[in-house]
Image 1 (spheres, rainbow, N blue to C red):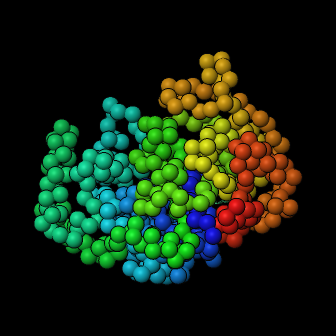
Image 2 (cartoon, protein in one colour; image 1 turned 90 degrees about the vertical axis):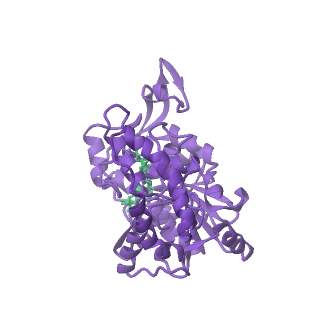
Image 3 (tube, helix red, strand yellow; image 1 turned 90 degrees about the horizontal axis):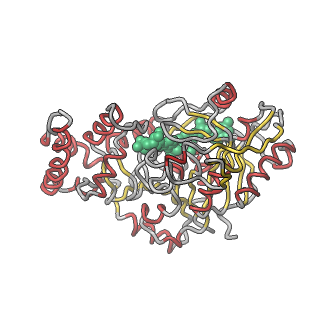
Length: 431
Ligand code: GDP
Ligand code: IMO
Ligand code: MG
């Protein structure tokens, strides 16, 4: 059996949660490897809706190990709240089924505050972040002044680490006219919750090696989407982590060959939440119609998601960058009522035709989509579980995506529910 990495192939919210939950029936271990509680992954199981932020989507199934890897940034209070909420919904969470990497970075209140301040200032470009402190926490990580999970185990060394972090933050805060960080309070607040977090803390790399030796099946759950990748996305309108498949091994602590199959989650149209370029955006009634039918409101911030036509140029590009082996196409049912569909197949830039999305923001906001028109199917696809039952025009649309991107379609999702999924190629089977 293969180990599979599930990666968002657009700007996030492609339906990763649903697909990871569905696939996790066949997996033993589910690992988050980047991002934090900026993610919102929705699962619908037996009519109960779960909205997961930090916890891997395997957590709702019995007898699975869920892991939060070192590449994730963890707000410990948000995590404890999420655990409490899920326990109330009847989900069992103990240190036997949840592990947290001891070397994962913590998001602390000053990170969240700084994220909000930056979003509110008028003199910088607003990114439209989730204001969860994700960016500032990753900055501290690469700046070598972060507090990590294992630092909670020793009050003396925690105090030293906090001094280093505070020194940096206080100078920024001073320049922003903000008060200094109350170190005593921060330490007190952290110590209060430390044992609740530390009980899940483990050297995750070692556990993964044990699982590999036992031939356990590992599912890596990406957050965000590849167009939000800090290197390959629409920089600076991106998140602060690498979201591509290559991040799975560094963010979990295993070799790249551990991953045998990269599954790209692709929404049948395009959405984006927050600011930034979006060539196929529909700022009209069709966009609103897609948004309404697709219930395109942010899981984390409840913001209205921007909607647009499927951009095949972008998806082909992200599939190449992540080495996607198969596509899980989601939300095809949302297009059921549209008479005509358009798919972006190239761009015009300064009068020239180009077949890729340029890296510079200056060009990204100027490209003009070249569309191929498709006839809609005007039939209900919601809940369909067999390829043959899909209307012929839906099959044509899906086959075009497959051929244009040069990637097989592994599955098609036809509703939010776990079971409403068409399987075409099993990613767990070595191909
Ligand atoms: P994620 O962040 O990639 O896990 O995606 P989100 O959970 O943020 O957003 C996807 C939304 O679409 C959620 O509300 C899902 O319940 C829903 N969804 C997932 N797959 C399908 C599908 O095939 N059809 C429809 N109509 N909704 C879906
Ligand atoms: P899931 O995992 C969609 C977006 C934010 C903003 C940018 C930076 O549910 O697909 P951040 O708070 O990360 O610094 O914000 O990234 N963003 C997402 N958009 N889905 C997500 O996660 C996102 N996580 C972050 O809206 O534009
Ligand atoms: Mg989401």
